[in-house]
Length: 464
Image 1: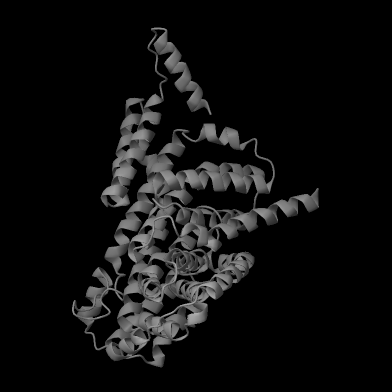
Image 2: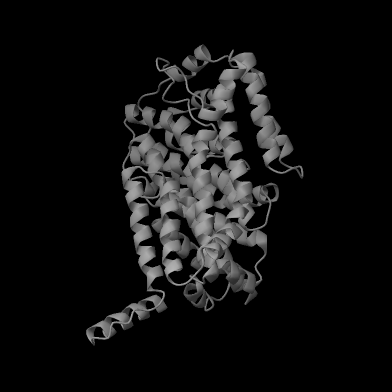
């Protein structure tokens, strides 16, 4: 790329005694500093959202030194950041929904039913299918791992099954819903960027993932047969029924989402109505007051510290989604500012040499891996890659629905295969397993991209 040429030219000029830095070398330095800031934030446990605020300031300062007015930088940032407002609303609604499903007993009910269906001889495949179903219902990979995933890995630790295998099945299953669920925040993000709708995307996403799901299931069955569970715990369903009033009406919040999804309503309506119904059920069945429900909505659901389920059933709330919404807003702001000054032009020139849908998707996957690795975030991988590639997709005349599938099969999944990325780091920390040992067994995460590329390639060959 031209950046490398410029660095070499600068070094030669320096050796010749002629100090002449390129005018935009400041952007390259800012990029290096930004990478260091993000990596430092990840290693120190500092929120990625706050780190991105500093990154924005670093790039803005470098561009200001190059002659850009502050007002112009703010305008370019807002031009792209305002597109994230709808996503931020959905993120906050999902935070509310998660807390209300916890408080009402809906999530405990799902966990209880799932555990009761476990078969010790098919534990690994059961873990994959159970986390897939739960993640489809919840729409969140981290929420799935933090609830049913923690339970399953605890059983695996007591049952003598290799933890890497179970962790791979759990993380892969968690991202089945993260990719396909209508309640997934990442699905809303991709839909917003590609000018599509979650309602129309969901059936197509699920249909596209079926081959990878089937092959993954077969592989997990083989692992299950060779590594059966030697210990099975049934105390959790009994504990849930003892501490929560499980009633058939707790299915209502789930049915609201399922029934309203095919309509033309914005995805915000099913989420909001489901959360509202769950809030009412929390007061009716679990005996919470309106004030407690409001508190859970804002701060997240928490059980008393002496409750045996306190480490399993918790979370949600607007507070927990505050940092992700800030991260989305700042990532879009940085992307818009860099877009406005032509930062991605060199990469786009390389993309102009790409021919065919298979190569275009391969380029998307490669760029998503790099942006995800540098940004340590699934959202950054998607937003930055879209900012770089959207003009290329437009020039190639690719339909929005096909662009959507490219991103669902790249940045959304590939981020979970990078141990330092939040998408992988948080689940690993939650389950207390090896940081990278799960990767060979997270079959769905790499089978879905590989099979998607293979279908694109075969389609091009048939046309030729």
